[in-house]
Image (cartoon, rainbow, N blue to C red; front, side, top):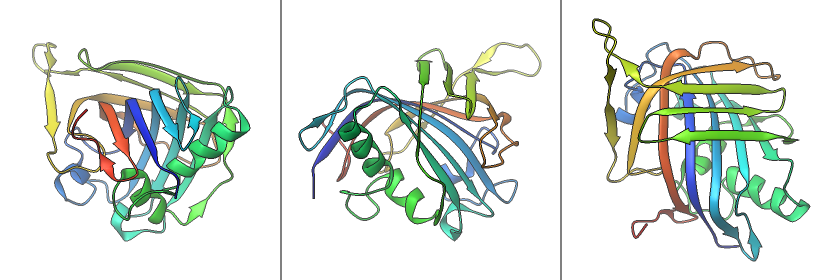
Length: 212
């Protein structure tokens, strides 16, 4: 098993309400789950392969709750990656070289047996976690964006964070309002003014890195 470690950030959108039920061990509010996500690696490695500066995108769709399985997923790898780097990114996003249940990638892959072929694409991502803003694109497959939640009366920005001391993805995430436009083969059309999550990533094959 190759060891790996990633330090970076993420922009996650899904079709649920701002308080994404998954974060609270509850069922999806619309009965099913759709998600479009982007990751940027500031510093990382998989074995001897460096992953600094690379990006990764993934689409997910489940007919019910994630833990009920039968999901569909597709991985998109940064087209700037070498073959070795692309292989490493796909392995990490597929839950390989990872302890059971240790990361979101392991769990999501295990719950999504329907897998479309991995594609290379030009991937952009710009996130300001503190301001709860972000935008990104994966070639012609999908784009997503996030902005702060706003008070429906005053229009003022509203700050909400989720703190998961024992989470498998992050410790603290800033929550915003997200929108995704997906034209890939996985049909996703319910992410519009719904949940968005922005967080730092400090993670390895054994889970979240506490020291970071």
